[in-house]
Figure 1 (tube, rainbow, N blue to C red):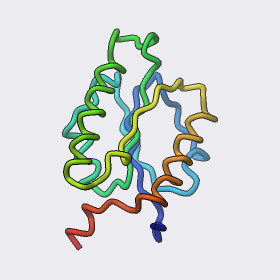
Figure 2 (tube, rainbow, N blue to C red; figure 1 turned 180 degrees about the vertical axis):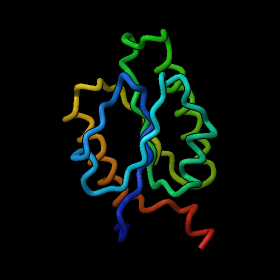
Figure 3 (cartoon, helix red, strand yellow; figure 1 turned 90 degrees about the vertical axis):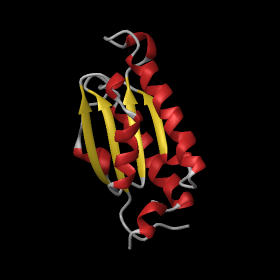
Length: 134
């Protein structure tokens, strides 16, 4: 299914795992949510991002052994995995939500993550929840 509109992404990230540059967001509309630690990633906020119109949600976290707050990225991964099952259960496709271990300096990999997400949305389509409200 081809997306006819600009894909909307919500990107949650730890301050230590992502450094924003405008060129990363070519081809999409991105809302970023900065957190002091990825352990602050909560189930409800991930779901609210979809309710607010995101076609996909990305969570960028520190490398597991490099988290300044011990296990923030591990906690975030558990929450993301849980929400992915909810998305699958309600027919929204858990592939819309992904978590990646990144570093703020790794602009190339982060841009690739965003571009791969946009490509994947061409297959799975726009946020199906929005069709129920139109």
